[in-house]
Image (cartoon, rainbow, N blue to C red; front, side, top):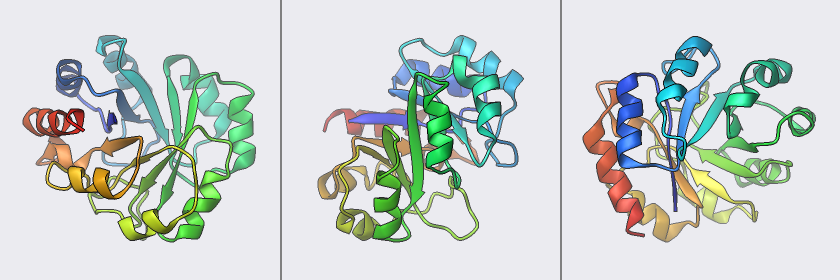
Length: 204
C-alpha cells in the first residue's frame, strides 16, 4: 500500500517525510491555494528530500507547456488536479517520461469512470466539495467509489486519517492513500500524525 503526503511547504515537512518514509511527497505548484509554493521554494525543498521518495507536482489547470518547461526535469509524477483532458495528457506524454496521475472528485460514478478512460497511469479520487480543487479534509463518498466500474489503480484522498484508513482499505481497493489535512495541526504538517498513519498503513 502506497503513501503520499501532499502539501509540502516547509523544511520541517521534508524532515518529517525523510524520517517516516512515505512513498511520495506532493508539492502544490499552481498558485492560489493555501499550500501553494513557488518554484524557488520547490527547488530548495527537493534538494533536501530523500532520493528514494518520489516527487509529485500537483497542478490545477496550468498550461501544459509551462509544466513541461519549468518542472518536468524535477518530478517523478505530474498530478493533474483540474479540468485537464486527453489532449493535455497526450501533450505531457510526448514531452515527459514520468508518471501522470489525474485527480477526480467522487461526485458520481460516471465522473470516476470517465477519468479512468484517460491515458493516465493512476487516478487520485478525492472528495467532491463545490468550488474546491481539493485539500478540504472532507471524506470522499466511498459508496460512489465502490459502485464505479473501472480497473485503473488509484490513490484514495479526502479526509483519510488514522481513524478511518483501515476501514477504507477494507472496503475499497486503492493502491495507496493521499494524505494532507489529516496529518496537519493548525494548518501545518504534524510529525506525530504523519508517523501514526504511516505506521498503520504499513501494517496492511
